[in-house]
Length: 223
Image (cartoon, rainbow, N blue to C red):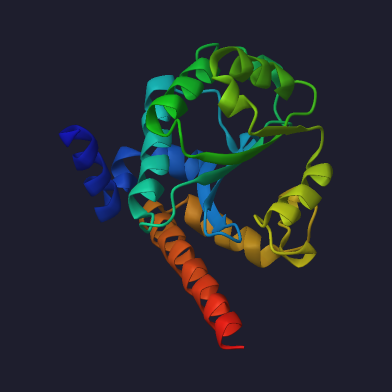
């Protein structure tokens, strides 16, 4: 626990640049951005941002753990759950096949780090990505698997993200999901390449969403 706390402290104080420069600057495939309409944060995974040629599984799992734990530590007292958007449809199967331990390691990491916090997950698999989902189904408990919606394409995923409150509207759909919101793209890119900024942003978004919700309740009561 002390080692984990020290790692987080170093990351939030700028050491992520030396400890995880490769993961953030060259990959940045796992990052926090946005909250749903109940204030639960959303963790995004974009496999097309992964570099598999020099991937080290243990190092990648430490990076993912730090990203997840950073937002959990930043959660307000009344926020407990997280959303997950997994985009597994844009990669070469031959590249992933070089790292057979990667998917099982990720599932084990998630189950160890936050097994009871998943609110909902949207997984865009395409054809090859279904192999990843099959591993998840084999390793994860049924109550977690039941929270995962498997979708064939990014375009089909967009209405579900809007309905769930993860995306506000058609105007907030980033370009990698077929939208035109370049402002959202820029915000995501800035966050995924700067760990302290990403955690500060998601902390503010979680808190702001709760303030907005409280104001709405108060206005309803007063009306």
